[in-house]
Amino acid sequence: MEPYKLGEMERRLAEMLWERAPLRTRDLVAACAEAFAWKRTTTYTMLSRLCERGLFAMEKGEVRALVTREEFQAAQGEQFVNENFAGSLPRFLAAFVRRKKLTETEIDEIERLIRDHKEE
Image (cartoon, rainbow, N blue to C red):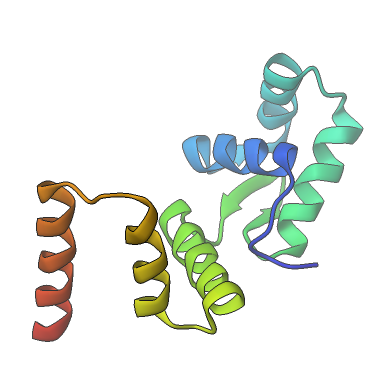
């Protein structure tokens, strides 16, 4: 099971958890029943998948995030670049800008990120 590839419903549950965690499991079951029309067993099944991936933990009736949304997204991006561009960020950026013209704001932001990285 790949930790950074989620199905649609797993992603929706993860988003809910990142918004609300830490969260009591009984409150999660109620929220999932309302938001997704899930039964308790479905909620626990989906939650266990996210816990198996190491994204969340359930202890003593409470769910907490082990990985932040930002950490998860960064890992997803890194995995994508590794799988599709042999780990080369320049190759990814070159492919991206061939299809989409960057705005001045985007260019400035990328330049700032590079400057900040160089200073570290």
